[in-house]
Amino acid sequence: MTLLSVRGLRKSYAGKAAVAGVDFDLAPGECFGLLGPNGAGKTTTLRLALGLTLADSGSITLLDCAVPAQAREARVRAGVVPQLDNLDPDFTVRENLLVYGRYFDIPHAELEKRIPDLLEYAGLASRGDASIRALSGGMKRRLTLARALINDPDLLFLDEPTTGLDPQARHVIWERLRQLTLRGKTLLLTTHFMEEAERLCHRIAIMDNGRIISTGTPRELIAANIEPEVVEVYGDGAEAWAASAGAKLAERCEQHGETVFCYAHDARALVADLGAYSEQNNAQDLRYLHRRANLEDVFLKLTGRELRD
Image (cartoon, rainbow, N blue to C red; front, side):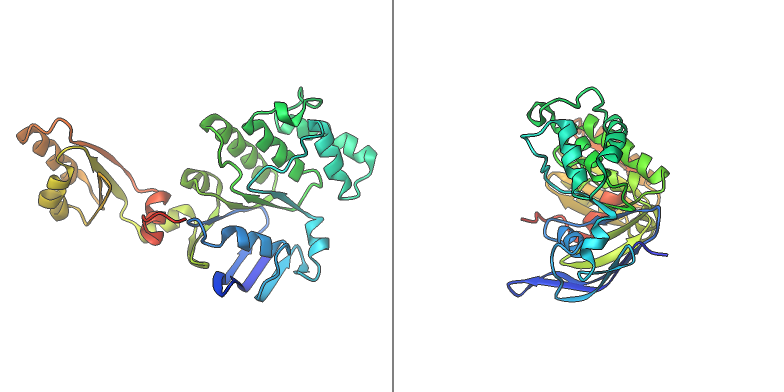
């Protein structure tokens, strides 16, 4: 059983492909992540799946409904957290939930029963009568998430839900999203935070130039695409050390800015040589970090390190 099935999806603007033949499925109860640089096609894919944008070609089945023909019926059973908050500043916190719930023709008595639980879920139980203008950025994002749950959706679309939040607020949102998956909700998430994707997603698809270039669990993506250990070297002497020893001892070295990234299956020889090099050359400003490879390493290897505008 799949809650969302996408096949051969294509969309171009002014002759440039935004989505260029995308295929994926969502199983019930999973958090599926779409990762990619700016302009990779993530948000366009979400809009196409919801029937908010018409595809040039391809097929979409959302919650057993053909999109776009039955998009309205499908969206009744879906929730959406957009990139930017679109809460109504003229209404209170509680009124935002009440008015939004009316779009789904939910009876008033049922809305009155749901709203206290949603305010509690958002950590806003004491702020129901507060103005939207009085809320912090984190509070607004939590309210936007709670609002997306007003219709008890089977599938939740989240487009960069923690962008612009401080670390504390981001961790609160992560905890709320984990609660949803534990309750059996299905999530489709786009994010630029690799730690967010690694923590929350059961499966991930990495997009670039409108195409999905790799798919798997976070562990599968790391194992298939990157060496397991990384040594980041920076400071005075990093480039000289990399040219002499790093290139010989590492399986792969890349320099980005002042940092040299050395990838290896066993980095002990790299770390030992760095210590000896620092002592012999009195390189007190030469610093390094030895760590396990992560999803960000995979992302940068597959999509490149250059800026995307």
